[in-house]
Image: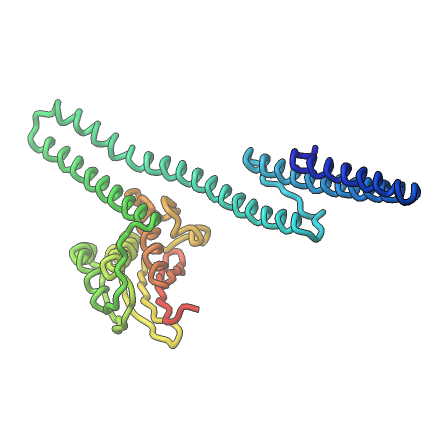
Length: 330
């Protein structure tokens, strides 16, 4: 189908060819015939190539309609040289980008649905427990039993508070809304701050603690780094039996500085190791109170500081977490 502008050009070409042929009639009839044939031939060639061009444009328009409908399959194998082929190639690049973004959005939707299901599951247990305790508390007359029920409710509330607080922190880190302050700080001071909340627990469980860390400087957010180390230390203590050992050491190389946190607890099963930093993941040796977000939070924080966390473990022999802070970004 030819548009209005091209119809005018074709009409103009036919009229000019006819007028020139008419003028040539006064000179030589054969010349007039040649002029008419040439004029109509040129006009015909113009019509032919214009139609092909508009067919390709219409094809591209159909492709775009399919993309708008959610079909991202565009074949460029038949491309040749020319401005329309360049346009088609550029459209293909845009479509590939849109397709990859669409796939990421689908993954995000699945991840969000799974996360909401996990969060609901984690909150359901303490809520159910508190509802039962509240009902029992309303009927209980014994003061000792009442105190026991109140203590259980308080523990469940603390668990919910910790869960919600850490979920919000993870969400902020993912969304990039955290005011992550990059500055140089002492790793030794940070580790000392990280162990403080657990000194009483270490004493109660009779876990010996050795901090052999040498000092070095890290560029990052000291508050978030302290919290990340706290989550790792908490995990080690939870999986270490009474009378166990917990050690912190450092390694300084030309490429990186690392912190090594080691325990001699129950260890991590081999099949759980690849998933240990995934959110809401529960390994075979996870405690009943574990919700599986502490190590995920730690991993996110260290990655923001050009760091990398790895774990090695052996059942019944313990686990070793190594956090490397690389000196140069390649």
